[in-house]
Length: 84
Image 1 (cartoon, helix red, strand yellow):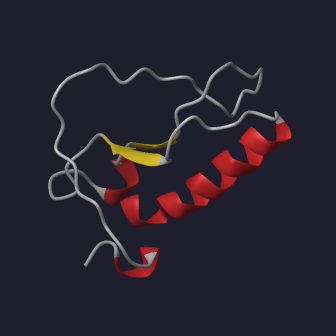
Image 2: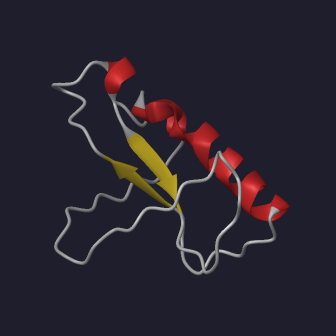
């Protein structure tokens, strides 16, 4: 479920530190599915951060977000209430 992405951000930070990769921008969550029409177990998301360079790590994946217009929603608060 989407509200559990905090764990992915923590793991991402640990992996970047282990490979000495420095972020070049803020961390972002990329959510691919509508939680009102997709079962929680089938929701797809990425915990992401822009970086320079690469790392050979099977748990890290490079994705490219192409330019364009995107809807953005900024949430301030704990992950506990994110789905409310």
